[in-house]
Amino acid sequence: MAYIIQGETGEWEVVIGLEVHAQITSNSKLFSGSSTTFGSEPNTQVSLVDAAMPGMLPVINEYCVEQAVKTGLGLKAQINLKSVFARKNYFYADLPQGYQISQYELPVVGEGTVILDLPDGKTADVGIERLHMEQDAGKSMHDQDPKRSFIDLNRSGVALMEIVSKPDLRSPEHAGIFLRKVRSILRYLGTCDGNMDEGSMRADVNVSVRKVGETELRTRTECKNVNSVRFVMQAIEHEAERQVEVYEDGGEVVQETRLFDAANGETRPMRAKEFAHDYRYFPDPDLLPLEFTQAYVDDIKQHLPELPDEKKQRFMADYGLSAYDAGVLVVEKETADYYEDVIEKGGGKEGLDPKQAANWIITNLFAVLNDKGLSITESPVSAGNFGKLLHLIKDNTISGRIAKDVFEIMVEDDGDPETIVEEKGMKQITDTGAIETAVDEVIAANPDKVAEVKDGKERLLGWFTGQVMKATQGKANPQAVNEILKKKILG
Ligand code: MN
Image 1: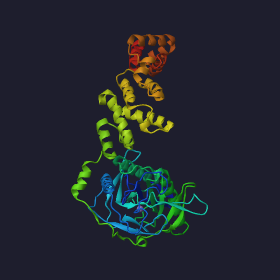
Image 2 (image 1 turned 60 degrees about the horizontal axis):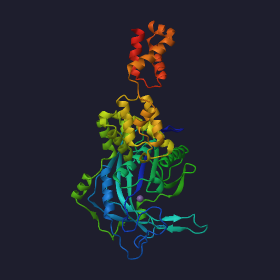
Image 3 (image 1 turned 120 degrees about the vertical axis):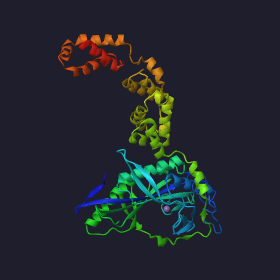
């Protein structure tokens, strides 16, 4: 689906690249042993290294390196066996070193690919330019005192991965799908928790526009530190429209850093864009180049968990799911696990209908979770009981219609569907004698309609089926009802 902005001078398209800052899941920081626990009292997790005391030397945290390599492999990217840490120099109150240790010319991870799962079931590839490791800065607090600002260095030195996409994205929607997919991969890998509201994942959004058909990129702006998927999409939308207006008013877009203001959904200028040379990058003399063997990389690769793309393919092949359903179920590993647990507890692929199971989870269970604001791990219906319910449909104990009623009762206290069906007398009537009695009664009460059916209005049979189902409180097996009706009326 093309995202086109209709301007006064013609059609415009938007070109988007994202830089995702993802905090590496690790108990200690990138170059020191300080804790990374979120939400602690200010300045309680600061070593002499993090505070940049004179003479302190950084020591690389091997676990963080492994996490970065793992992430690179998850992004189907080139792993560079040699990479170099560089100093990115700038002055800011929350950066005690006066420089950030980052990677510049030789990042640990090179080019890769992220596959977007689109709403129509199709996919699209987005290129990854690179992934590098770097330190996070501290935090300035301006709201504690009317006259002074305070600095919290707990975050100073925490390990980040900066994942840079190629400018392959063409719509706010795709940018949102990209971010969610990256987050999903990171969570599967356990290399970043992806919690954007805690700041452990945030995005810098690069946006430019050009006339449809142009091949050169125009000047871009960058919105810094956008901290939710929805805000990223809003920032793109607003920024693209603003740029189109600038061009159509005869102006030029200036390369600059802008700030997304969530309160009014707008972007505004923050500072003139720095160019790489402003940072005076040079290799950090305190750190040796990072080198590892192919065997080290291969070993990490062998121990990667099954990732969303592979899981999706397996769900389609093993359970016959549509690309869309499989894609929805694998976004969160917990949902995928729940689905497979339902299948197992329901007696496997023979014990229930796996497609029906996917449908029930995506439609019925998700509605309940949404409504109650719960995650799948807090589901009020356990996978065991859900599996049992679907098995009861499969073996004709209850109809799909009755199952919906049973499900509503289960939602209250994770009731056992077998007990509910038994206690409430909800079993499907398969006893033909009982169904025949109900059919006879409906026929006797509607002689005129019977005559119409006999006259050839056979589609009225559906109405009769409905009446019998009503009379049996939905418990009759609809197929049996149909057969008996045909036999009794049409002979
Ligand atoms: Mn960065």
